[in-house]
Image (tube, rainbow, N blue to C red):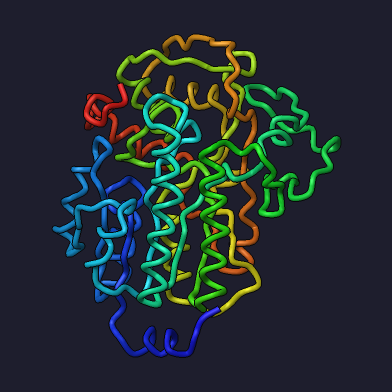
Length: 369
């Protein structure tokens, strides 16, 4: 998986970490978490600052983190960057609706999420850098996920586990062995293709590669939209009185996802950086899991207790990439890395709610209103 020269450099030289998409919600959170844990490590990153809100994270310079304005779609923007021991790829158009939502084109999606990854992998090949790809739960096949038999229990959907016999699916959720068969959405396909290329570069050029398939990430300061960052978007929209809708699945908000704080993701990344020796697996689900899952209706009930009651409209339209129940099983990460989330769902929601109280016009500031 890696050459002797790489291991010697790791042990005898000061470590340098390069983060793409460093001014995004996840990239900036990972950068700060690593800085707090490894104060003598040099951290730098690149961001094209195209997303509303990302300019705010240029303040990373105050933490001794260098921010470079550039675009990973252009190989020339990476040519003058210094060598790094590790690259953490947090740059992407992050919504399952990317390429079809009239916010970005399909070509833009592929250029960002796939061609950009190729440029980063070439950087890793040139400098013999380790590579950590932040991938997504949306690489899992839509049709079997959509066909899981569900029942309503109170205010949420629950799988009828006794009727389900799918590889990679259990009471703990969706594991890494679950199908990746098409369709997975254009977004999911770009991430799945990036995963395959990353693994091949790792084997071919003997550099360490880890792939982390993230569930829904949530926390204060997220650039949330209804298609991405749903927990943050919902809380901010609820508090500020913006219109909200339960879309599809009967229009009752029973669909379920789980939430993970980016600090917990960063803690796994730290383990991977500091312990690059080969393991049995290189792909990991990184998610809040069953204990940190809730439906939109449950999220609304939480918001009502915190901010007061309000009406949510029903929209019966079915969107092609929506899934009624998706919770990831991160048991592999726990077994291989002794990792599990430290932040509870309640603490994540409280953090977002506090941020909403301090920033009542947040959705306007980040262009999500």
